[in-house]
Amino acid sequence: MFAADRVQDLLRRLREDVAALIHSEIELAKTEVIEKVKTHAKAAVLVAIALPFVLLALFAFLFAAIAALALVVPWWAAGLIVGGVLVLIAAVLALLGMRSMRKAGAPTPNEAIIEAMATVDDLTKTMEEELDEVRSA
Image (cartoon, rainbow, N blue to C red):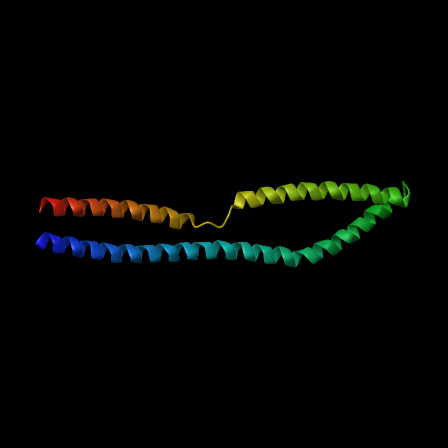
């Protein structure tokens, strides 16, 4: 009877410990994801704030470029040339942005996943040792 009581006690403690570990791993994952999302949000806010200023400067430079080209070619041709250059620049920037987004990756809790896997390994080893100890008693 003593071994059965001990096994029940071990299983009860194991269940409680596993529940506590799972809750702590979930909290770690939440914290890690929140940190990454906050970092992305801050970057997005800065870009959004800069965008109107960039657009105003771009309009001024575009007008100056079209006016300068209009001295050599007709106004409509100058507009087409500047427009074509803008499309090329937009395509390059879009490709660079897509590459950057892929490089940043999804906001996954990598550290929490590694920690959870290590915890499972430790629990498995501890469980095997406890069961071996109970079997030998």
